[in-house]
Image (cartoon, rainbow, N blue to C red; front, side, top):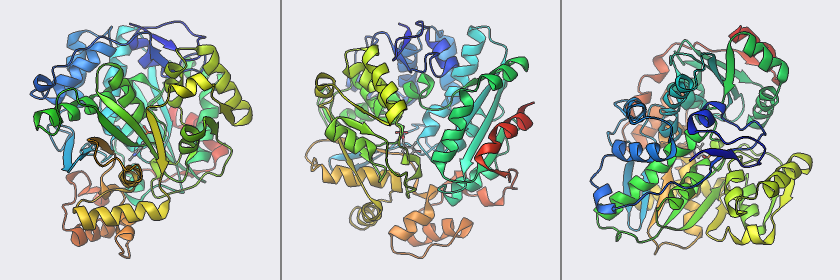
Length: 487
Ligand SMILES: *Cc1c(COP(=O)(O)O)cnc(C)c1O
Protein backbone atom coordinates (compact mmCIF):
# COMPACT_ATOMS: atom_id res chain seq x y z
CA UNK A 1 0.00 0.00 0.00
CA UNK A 2 1.28 3.44 -0.93
CA UNK A 3 -0.01 6.99 -0.72
CA UNK A 4 -1.18 9.09 -3.68
CA UNK A 5 -2.33 12.68 -3.94
CA UNK A 6 -6.05 13.52 -3.97
CA UNK A 7 -5.30 15.77 -6.96
CA UNK A 8 -3.59 13.09 -9.02
CA UNK A 9 -0.49 15.08 -9.91
CA UNK A 10 2.19 13.52 -7.73
CA UNK A 11 3.89 10.12 -7.68
CA UNK A 12 2.77 7.39 -5.27
CA UNK A 13 5.05 7.24 -2.22
CA UNK A 14 5.48 4.91 0.75
CA UNK A 15 4.04 5.99 4.11
CA UNK A 16 7.35 7.30 5.46
CA UNK A 17 7.73 9.65 2.49
CA UNK A 18 4.15 10.89 2.89
CA UNK A 19 4.81 11.60 6.59
CA UNK A 20 7.94 13.58 5.71
CA UNK A 21 6.31 15.55 2.90
CA UNK A 22 3.16 16.43 4.85
CA UNK A 23 1.37 17.85 1.82
CA UNK A 24 1.80 16.27 -1.64
CA UNK A 25 3.91 18.22 -4.16
CA UNK A 26 0.84 19.02 -6.32
CA UNK A 27 -0.89 20.67 -3.34
CA UNK A 28 -3.16 17.67 -2.74
CA UNK A 29 -3.37 15.45 0.33
CA UNK A 30 -1.98 11.95 0.63
CA UNK A 31 -4.53 9.10 0.67
CA UNK A 32 -3.91 5.34 0.78
CA UNK A 33 -4.06 3.53 -2.57
CA UNK A 34 -6.10 0.79 -0.92
CA UNK A 35 -7.60 0.05 2.49
CA UNK A 36 -5.58 -2.48 4.45
CA UNK A 37 -7.49 -5.69 5.21
CA UNK A 38 -8.08 -5.86 8.94
CA UNK A 39 -10.31 -8.31 10.77
CA UNK A 40 -11.88 -7.56 14.12
CA UNK A 41 -12.71 -9.99 16.86
CA UNK A 42 -14.16 -7.27 19.06
CA UNK A 43 -14.23 -9.19 22.34
CA UNK A 44 -10.60 -10.07 21.84
CA UNK A 45 -9.72 -6.45 20.94
CA UNK A 46 -11.57 -5.46 24.11
CA UNK A 47 -8.89 -7.32 26.10
CA UNK A 48 -6.02 -5.56 24.34
CA UNK A 49 -4.32 -2.41 25.57
CA UNK A 50 -4.66 0.88 23.74
CA UNK A 51 -0.98 0.58 22.88
CA UNK A 52 -1.40 -2.88 21.33
CA UNK A 53 -4.27 -1.64 19.19
CA UNK A 54 -2.26 1.43 18.14
CA UNK A 55 0.53 -0.88 17.06
CA UNK A 56 -1.83 -2.89 14.88
CA UNK A 57 -3.32 0.15 13.17
CA UNK A 58 0.07 1.82 12.68
CA UNK A 59 1.54 -1.36 11.19
CA UNK A 60 -1.32 -1.57 8.70
CA UNK A 61 -1.13 2.06 7.54
CA UNK A 62 2.59 2.80 7.94
CA UNK A 63 3.45 -0.26 5.94
CA UNK A 64 7.11 0.49 5.24
CA UNK A 65 7.96 0.92 8.95
CA UNK A 66 9.39 -2.18 10.63
CA UNK A 67 7.67 -3.73 13.66
CA UNK A 68 10.53 -2.52 15.84
CA UNK A 69 10.14 1.04 14.53
CA UNK A 70 6.38 0.99 15.16
CA UNK A 71 6.95 -0.42 18.64
CA UNK A 72 9.40 2.39 19.42
CA UNK A 73 6.96 5.06 18.19
CA UNK A 74 4.11 3.64 20.28
CA UNK A 75 6.33 3.31 23.37
CA UNK A 76 7.38 6.94 23.13
CA UNK A 77 3.95 8.31 22.23
CA UNK A 78 1.75 6.49 24.74
CA UNK A 79 3.76 6.27 27.93
CA UNK A 80 3.57 7.97 31.29
CA UNK A 81 3.11 11.48 29.88
CA UNK A 82 -0.58 10.46 29.93
CA UNK A 83 -2.71 10.78 33.03
CA UNK A 84 -4.29 7.41 32.25
CA UNK A 85 -2.42 4.36 30.92
CA UNK A 86 -5.46 3.67 28.70
CA UNK A 87 -4.83 7.05 26.96
CA UNK A 88 -8.57 7.51 26.42
CA UNK A 89 -11.08 7.95 29.25
CA UNK A 90 -14.61 6.71 28.65
CA UNK A 91 -17.58 8.37 30.32
CA UNK A 92 -20.87 6.54 29.83
CA UNK A 93 -24.15 8.49 29.95
CA UNK A 94 -26.90 6.05 28.99
CA UNK A 95 -26.51 5.47 25.24
CA UNK A 96 -23.91 8.16 24.87
CA UNK A 97 -20.20 7.46 25.35
CA UNK A 98 -17.88 10.41 25.75
CA UNK A 99 -14.40 9.52 24.53
CA UNK A 100 -12.25 11.75 26.73
CA UNK A 101 -9.29 12.46 24.49
CA UNK A 102 -7.78 15.16 26.70
CA UNK A 103 -5.68 13.30 29.26
CA UNK A 104 -2.39 14.07 27.51
CA UNK A 105 0.18 16.79 28.23
CA UNK A 106 -1.73 19.79 26.79
CA UNK A 107 -5.32 18.79 27.69
CA UNK A 108 -6.67 18.45 24.13
CA UNK A 109 -7.18 15.57 21.71
CA UNK A 110 -4.38 16.72 19.44
CA UNK A 111 -1.92 15.16 21.89
CA UNK A 112 -3.04 11.69 20.77
CA UNK A 113 -1.51 12.25 17.34
CA UNK A 114 1.12 14.83 18.17
CA UNK A 115 2.83 12.67 20.77
CA UNK A 116 3.38 10.15 17.95
CA UNK A 117 4.06 12.34 14.91
CA UNK A 118 7.59 13.53 15.86
CA UNK A 119 8.78 9.92 16.14
CA UNK A 120 6.98 8.88 12.97
CA UNK A 121 8.74 11.77 11.30
CA UNK A 122 12.28 11.30 12.60
CA UNK A 123 11.99 7.57 11.87
CA UNK A 124 10.84 8.46 8.35
CA UNK A 125 13.80 10.80 7.92
CA UNK A 126 16.20 8.01 8.89
CA UNK A 127 14.47 5.58 6.51
CA UNK A 128 14.63 8.07 3.63
CA UNK A 129 18.23 9.03 4.47
CA UNK A 130 17.21 12.65 5.06
CA UNK A 131 19.72 14.44 7.26
CA UNK A 132 18.20 17.90 6.97
CA UNK A 133 16.69 19.48 10.01
CA UNK A 134 12.89 19.24 9.88
CA UNK A 135 11.20 22.56 10.47
CA UNK A 136 7.61 22.46 11.62
CA UNK A 137 5.89 25.75 10.86
CA UNK A 138 2.38 26.15 12.14
CA UNK A 139 -0.31 28.72 12.75
CA UNK A 140 -2.50 27.74 15.64
CA UNK A 141 -5.80 28.77 17.13
CA UNK A 142 -4.42 27.39 20.38
CA UNK A 143 -4.45 23.63 20.60
CA UNK A 144 -2.27 22.61 17.66
CA UNK A 145 0.61 24.84 18.72
CA UNK A 146 0.76 23.67 22.30
CA UNK A 147 0.35 20.01 21.36
CA UNK A 148 2.95 20.29 18.57
CA UNK A 149 5.47 21.84 20.95
CA UNK A 150 4.80 19.21 23.56
CA UNK A 151 5.39 16.52 20.92
CA UNK A 152 8.33 18.04 19.03
CA UNK A 153 9.92 19.79 22.02
CA UNK A 154 13.59 18.78 22.25
CA UNK A 155 13.20 16.04 19.63
CA UNK A 156 16.49 15.80 17.74
CA UNK A 157 16.69 17.06 14.19
CA UNK A 158 13.56 19.23 14.51
CA UNK A 159 12.68 22.90 15.01
CA UNK A 160 9.16 23.97 15.80
CA UNK A 161 7.89 27.44 14.92
CA UNK A 162 4.47 28.48 16.19
CA UNK A 163 2.46 31.60 15.41
CA UNK A 164 -0.68 32.22 17.42
CA UNK A 165 -3.21 35.03 17.11
CA UNK A 166 -3.50 37.67 19.81
CA UNK A 167 -7.25 37.42 19.51
CA UNK A 168 -9.12 34.19 20.28
CA UNK A 169 -6.82 31.97 22.34
CA UNK A 170 -7.78 31.12 25.93
CA UNK A 171 -5.81 32.29 28.97
CA UNK A 172 -4.47 28.79 29.52
CA UNK A 173 -3.44 28.38 25.90
CA UNK A 174 -1.59 31.72 25.96
CA UNK A 175 0.17 30.75 29.19
CA UNK A 176 1.09 27.32 27.77
CA UNK A 177 2.60 28.97 24.71
CA UNK A 178 4.45 31.76 26.47
CA UNK A 179 6.04 29.39 28.98
CA UNK A 180 7.14 26.69 26.52
CA UNK A 181 10.55 25.49 27.63
CA UNK A 182 11.88 23.38 24.74
CA UNK A 183 15.06 24.77 23.17
CA UNK A 184 13.88 24.03 19.63
CA UNK A 185 10.54 25.85 20.06
CA UNK A 186 9.98 29.35 18.64
CA UNK A 187 6.72 31.00 19.65
CA UNK A 188 5.38 34.33 18.45
CA UNK A 189 2.04 36.12 18.75
CA UNK A 190 0.56 37.77 15.68
CA UNK A 191 -1.81 40.73 15.77
CA UNK A 192 -5.28 39.83 14.54
CA UNK A 193 -7.27 36.60 14.59
CA UNK A 194 -6.44 33.01 13.60
CA UNK A 195 -7.55 33.46 10.01
CA UNK A 196 -4.96 36.27 9.60
CA UNK A 197 -2.21 34.12 11.16
CA UNK A 198 -3.18 31.09 9.09
CA UNK A 199 -3.11 33.05 5.85
CA UNK A 200 0.33 34.51 6.57
CA UNK A 201 1.78 31.06 7.34
CA UNK A 202 0.20 29.42 4.29
CA UNK A 203 1.72 32.10 2.04
CA UNK A 204 5.14 31.37 3.48
CA UNK A 205 4.93 27.61 3.06
CA UNK A 206 4.58 28.22 -0.68
CA UNK A 207 7.38 30.81 -0.84
CA UNK A 208 10.15 29.39 -3.13
CA UNK A 209 12.77 31.85 -1.87
CA UNK A 210 12.34 30.76 1.72
CA UNK A 211 12.41 27.11 0.66
CA UNK A 212 15.76 27.70 -1.01
CA UNK A 213 17.12 29.48 2.07
CA UNK A 214 16.09 26.52 4.20
CA UNK A 215 17.77 24.16 1.77
CA UNK A 216 20.97 26.22 1.97
CA UNK A 217 20.87 25.79 5.73
CA UNK A 218 20.20 22.05 5.37
CA UNK A 219 16.64 22.39 6.60
CA UNK A 220 13.22 21.56 5.17
CA UNK A 221 9.61 22.24 6.07
CA UNK A 222 7.16 19.60 7.10
CA UNK A 223 3.70 19.84 8.56
CA UNK A 224 2.25 19.04 11.96
CA UNK A 225 -1.18 19.98 10.68
CA UNK A 226 -3.83 17.28 10.30
CA UNK A 227 -3.16 17.21 6.56
CA UNK A 228 -0.23 14.96 7.55
CA UNK A 229 -1.12 11.25 7.49
CA UNK A 230 1.01 10.97 10.63
CA UNK A 231 -1.70 12.97 12.40
CA UNK A 232 -4.65 11.22 10.84
CA UNK A 233 -3.80 7.55 11.34
CA UNK A 234 -3.12 7.76 15.11
CA UNK A 235 -6.58 9.31 15.52
CA UNK A 236 -8.27 6.21 14.11
CA UNK A 237 -7.18 4.21 17.12
CA UNK A 238 -9.46 5.72 19.76
CA UNK A 239 -12.62 5.04 17.78
CA UNK A 240 -11.70 1.38 17.45
CA UNK A 241 -10.60 1.29 21.08
CA UNK A 242 -13.81 2.86 22.40
CA UNK A 243 -15.93 0.53 20.30
CA UNK A 244 -14.11 -2.53 21.61
CA UNK A 245 -14.72 -1.34 25.19
CA UNK A 246 -18.44 -0.91 24.52
CA UNK A 247 -18.54 -4.53 23.38
CA UNK A 248 -16.51 -5.63 26.38
CA UNK A 249 -18.81 -3.76 28.76
CA UNK A 250 -21.84 -5.25 27.02
CA UNK A 251 -23.19 -1.83 26.08
CA UNK A 252 -23.47 -3.11 22.49
CA UNK A 253 -23.27 -6.40 20.59
CA UNK A 254 -20.13 -7.06 18.54
CA UNK A 255 -20.84 -5.75 15.05
CA UNK A 256 -23.68 -3.44 16.10
CA UNK A 257 -23.45 -0.04 14.41
CA UNK A 258 -22.82 3.12 16.42
CA UNK A 259 -23.13 6.80 15.54
CA UNK A 260 -20.15 9.08 15.88
CA UNK A 261 -20.46 12.77 16.83
CA UNK A 262 -17.38 14.94 16.42
CA UNK A 263 -16.79 18.66 17.03
CA UNK A 264 -15.13 19.62 13.78
CA UNK A 265 -12.70 22.23 12.49
CA UNK A 266 -10.23 21.02 9.91
CA UNK A 267 -12.19 17.76 9.48
CA UNK A 268 -9.28 15.59 10.65
CA UNK A 269 -10.84 14.00 13.69
CA UNK A 270 -14.07 12.94 12.01
CA UNK A 271 -12.20 11.80 8.92
CA UNK A 272 -10.23 9.43 11.15
CA UNK A 273 -13.57 7.88 12.17
CA UNK A 274 -14.44 7.48 8.48
CA UNK A 275 -11.07 5.78 7.89
CA UNK A 276 -11.80 3.49 10.83
CA UNK A 277 -15.07 2.51 9.18
CA UNK A 278 -13.25 1.63 5.96
CA UNK A 279 -11.20 -0.94 7.88
CA UNK A 280 -14.12 -2.41 9.79
CA UNK A 281 -15.52 -0.10 12.50
CA UNK A 282 -19.33 -0.45 12.43
CA UNK A 283 -20.58 3.14 12.05
CA UNK A 284 -24.06 4.14 10.90
CA UNK A 285 -23.96 7.94 10.90
CA UNK A 286 -21.14 10.47 11.15
CA UNK A 287 -22.37 13.68 12.76
CA UNK A 288 -20.31 16.75 11.87
CA UNK A 289 -20.71 19.37 14.61
CA UNK A 290 -19.66 22.99 13.98
CA UNK A 291 -19.75 26.29 15.85
CA UNK A 292 -20.92 29.57 14.28
CA UNK A 293 -18.29 29.14 11.58
CA UNK A 294 -20.76 26.68 10.10
CA UNK A 295 -19.39 26.24 6.58
CA UNK A 296 -19.57 22.46 6.96
CA UNK A 297 -23.17 22.47 8.18
CA UNK A 298 -24.22 24.33 5.06
CA UNK A 299 -22.02 22.13 2.90
CA UNK A 300 -23.51 18.84 4.05
CA UNK A 301 -27.01 20.26 3.91
CA UNK A 302 -26.75 21.81 0.43
CA UNK A 303 -23.82 20.22 -1.45
CA UNK A 304 -22.21 23.65 -1.93
CA UNK A 305 -19.07 24.72 -0.09
CA UNK A 306 -18.93 28.47 0.45
CA UNK A 307 -16.17 30.08 2.44
CA UNK A 308 -17.30 33.61 1.55
CA UNK A 309 -18.51 34.68 4.95
CA UNK A 310 -17.22 36.46 8.02
CA UNK A 311 -14.78 34.63 10.24
CA UNK A 312 -16.14 34.48 13.78
CA UNK A 313 -14.08 34.24 16.94
CA UNK A 314 -16.00 31.86 19.23
CA UNK A 315 -15.60 30.20 22.61
CA UNK A 316 -14.56 27.02 20.74
CA UNK A 317 -11.53 28.52 18.94
CA UNK A 318 -10.09 25.23 17.61
CA UNK A 319 -13.16 25.03 15.37
CA UNK A 320 -12.93 28.60 14.06
CA UNK A 321 -12.05 27.53 10.54
CA UNK A 322 -13.50 28.45 7.15
CA UNK A 323 -11.48 26.09 4.95
CA UNK A 324 -11.59 22.53 6.26
CA UNK A 325 -8.56 20.95 4.60
CA UNK A 326 -9.30 17.30 5.27
CA UNK A 327 -12.69 17.45 3.59
CA UNK A 328 -10.73 17.07 0.37
CA UNK A 329 -9.86 13.52 1.40
CA UNK A 330 -13.47 12.57 2.08
CA UNK A 331 -14.52 13.97 -1.30
CA UNK A 332 -11.78 11.95 -2.98
CA UNK A 333 -13.34 8.73 -1.73
CA UNK A 334 -16.94 9.94 -2.23
CA UNK A 335 -16.15 10.76 -5.86
CA UNK A 336 -14.87 7.23 -6.46
CA UNK A 337 -11.21 8.38 -6.29
CA UNK A 338 -11.76 10.89 -9.09
CA UNK A 339 -8.75 13.18 -8.73
CA UNK A 340 -9.78 15.31 -11.73
CA UNK A 341 -13.04 16.12 -10.00
CA UNK A 342 -11.26 16.97 -6.75
CA UNK A 343 -8.78 19.20 -8.50
CA UNK A 344 -11.71 21.02 -10.08
CA UNK A 345 -13.33 21.64 -6.68
CA UNK A 346 -10.10 22.89 -5.18
CA UNK A 347 -9.39 25.19 -8.12
CA UNK A 348 -12.90 26.64 -7.77
CA UNK A 349 -12.37 27.09 -4.04
CA UNK A 350 -9.11 28.91 -4.68
CA UNK A 351 -10.60 31.17 -7.35
CA UNK A 352 -14.10 31.89 -6.07
CA UNK A 353 -14.24 30.60 -2.50
CA UNK A 354 -16.95 28.10 -3.42
CA UNK A 355 -17.58 24.80 -5.21
CA UNK A 356 -20.60 22.64 -5.85
CA UNK A 357 -20.62 18.85 -5.67
CA UNK A 358 -21.84 16.66 -8.49
CA UNK A 359 -25.06 14.80 -7.72
CA UNK A 360 -23.33 11.42 -7.59
CA UNK A 361 -20.58 12.52 -5.22
CA UNK A 362 -23.14 14.20 -3.00
CA UNK A 363 -25.22 11.01 -2.93
CA UNK A 364 -22.18 9.17 -1.55
CA UNK A 365 -22.16 11.42 1.53
CA UNK A 366 -25.52 10.18 2.81
CA UNK A 367 -23.97 8.72 5.98
CA UNK A 368 -22.91 12.23 7.06
CA UNK A 369 -25.20 14.60 8.99
CA UNK A 370 -24.29 18.08 10.12
CA UNK A 371 -25.41 20.69 12.60
CA UNK A 372 -24.03 23.63 14.55
CA UNK A 373 -24.23 25.41 17.88
CA UNK A 374 -24.14 29.19 18.36
CA UNK A 375 -22.53 30.80 21.40
CA UNK A 376 -25.69 30.69 23.53
CA UNK A 377 -26.26 27.05 22.65
CA UNK A 378 -22.69 26.16 23.60
CA UNK A 379 -23.16 27.82 27.00
CA UNK A 380 -26.55 26.15 27.46
CA UNK A 381 -25.11 22.72 26.65
CA UNK A 382 -22.36 23.20 29.25
CA UNK A 383 -24.83 24.37 31.91
CA UNK A 384 -27.44 21.72 31.19
CA UNK A 385 -25.00 18.81 31.04
CA UNK A 386 -23.47 19.96 34.30
CA UNK A 387 -26.81 20.41 36.07
CA UNK A 388 -28.68 17.39 34.69
CA UNK A 389 -25.89 14.90 34.04
CA UNK A 390 -23.23 16.07 36.53
CA UNK A 391 -20.61 16.13 33.81
CA UNK A 392 -18.44 19.08 32.88
CA UNK A 393 -17.87 19.87 29.18
CA UNK A 394 -15.44 22.22 27.49
CA UNK A 395 -16.93 24.49 24.78
CA UNK A 396 -15.81 22.24 21.86
CA UNK A 397 -17.34 19.13 23.37
CA UNK A 398 -20.43 21.20 24.17
CA UNK A 399 -20.85 21.95 20.46
CA UNK A 400 -20.98 18.20 19.80
CA UNK A 401 -23.34 17.63 22.72
CA UNK A 402 -25.73 20.30 21.41
CA UNK A 403 -25.75 18.88 17.90
CA UNK A 404 -26.19 15.33 19.24
CA UNK A 405 -29.29 16.46 21.08
CA UNK A 406 -30.53 18.31 18.01
CA UNK A 407 -30.23 15.12 15.94
CA UNK A 408 -32.65 13.36 18.23
CA UNK A 409 -30.62 10.19 18.01
CA UNK A 410 -30.59 9.30 21.70
CA UNK A 411 -31.78 5.75 21.03
CA UNK A 412 -28.70 4.92 18.96
CA UNK A 413 -25.45 4.04 20.79
CA UNK A 414 -23.17 6.96 20.09
CA UNK A 415 -19.49 7.79 20.48
CA UNK A 416 -18.92 11.50 21.10
CA UNK A 417 -15.41 12.96 20.88
CA UNK A 418 -14.69 15.00 24.03
CA UNK A 419 -11.81 16.93 22.54
CA UNK A 420 -10.61 19.22 25.32
CA UNK A 421 -10.60 19.39 29.10
CA UNK A 422 -12.93 22.02 30.58
CA UNK A 423 -9.80 23.21 32.39
CA UNK A 424 -8.33 24.39 29.11
CA UNK A 425 -11.17 26.94 28.89
CA UNK A 426 -12.02 27.77 32.52
CA UNK A 427 -13.32 31.29 31.80
CA UNK A 428 -15.74 30.19 29.07
CA UNK A 429 -16.95 27.27 31.20
CA UNK A 430 -17.45 29.42 34.32
CA UNK A 431 -19.40 31.98 32.33
CA UNK A 432 -21.63 29.23 30.95
CA UNK A 433 -22.27 28.12 34.53
CA UNK A 434 -23.45 31.61 35.42
CA UNK A 435 -20.28 32.66 37.25
CA UNK A 436 -18.27 35.86 36.90
CA UNK A 437 -14.93 34.40 35.83
CA UNK A 438 -11.59 35.82 36.86
CA UNK A 439 -8.51 35.51 34.63
CA UNK A 440 -5.32 33.50 34.88
CA UNK A 441 -4.50 31.03 37.65
CA UNK A 442 -7.32 32.30 39.86
CA UNK A 443 -9.81 31.32 37.15
CA UNK A 444 -8.53 27.75 37.24
CA UNK A 445 -8.95 27.63 41.01
CA UNK A 446 -12.38 29.22 40.69
CA UNK A 447 -13.54 26.43 38.37
CA UNK A 448 -12.19 23.78 40.75
CA UNK A 449 -13.88 25.39 43.75
CA UNK A 450 -17.21 25.91 42.04
CA UNK A 451 -17.50 22.46 40.43
CA UNK A 452 -15.57 20.54 43.11
CA UNK A 453 -13.51 18.88 40.41
CA UNK A 454 -9.75 18.40 40.47
CA UNK A 455 -7.34 20.63 38.56
CA UNK A 456 -5.51 18.40 36.06
CA UNK A 457 -1.93 17.78 37.06
CA UNK A 458 -0.69 19.04 33.69
CA UNK A 459 -1.60 22.64 34.53
CA UNK A 460 -1.22 22.72 38.30
CA UNK A 461 2.06 24.60 38.06
CA UNK A 462 1.53 26.32 34.74
CA UNK A 463 1.25 29.80 36.21
CA UNK A 464 4.47 29.44 38.20
CA UNK A 465 6.56 28.89 35.07
CA UNK A 466 8.59 31.82 33.75
CA UNK A 467 7.32 33.60 30.62
CA UNK A 468 9.83 32.91 27.85
CA UNK A 469 8.09 34.04 24.67
CA UNK A 470 6.77 37.59 24.63
CA UNK A 471 7.22 38.66 21.03
CA UNK A 472 4.21 40.12 19.19
CA UNK A 473 4.47 40.86 15.47
CA UNK A 474 2.28 42.01 12.58
CA UNK A 475 1.43 39.44 9.88
CA UNK A 476 3.81 41.14 7.41
CA UNK A 477 6.76 40.58 9.80
CA UNK A 478 6.42 36.84 9.76
CA UNK A 479 9.14 36.13 7.19
CA UNK A 480 11.69 38.30 8.99
CA UNK A 481 10.80 36.59 12.25
CA UNK A 482 11.36 33.12 10.81
CA UNK A 483 14.74 34.16 9.42
CA UNK A 484 15.75 35.59 12.80
CA UNK A 485 14.67 32.47 14.65
CA UNK A 486 16.19 29.89 12.30
CA UNK A 487 19.30 31.25 10.64
C1 LIG B 1 -8.50 20.79 16.82
C2 LIG B 1 -9.69 20.67 17.71
C3 LIG B 1 -10.95 20.34 17.19
C4 LIG B 1 -11.21 20.17 15.72
O1 LIG B 1 -10.55 19.03 15.21
P1 LIG B 1 -10.37 18.85 13.64
O2 LIG B 1 -9.57 17.62 13.48
O3 LIG B 1 -9.63 20.08 13.17
O4 LIG B 1 -11.71 18.77 13.05
C5 LIG B 1 -12.00 20.20 18.08
N1 LIG B 1 -11.83 20.40 19.41
C6 LIG B 1 -10.64 20.71 19.93
C7 LIG B 1 -10.52 20.93 21.39
C8 LIG B 1 -9.52 20.86 19.11
O5 LIG B 1 -8.32 21.18 19.64
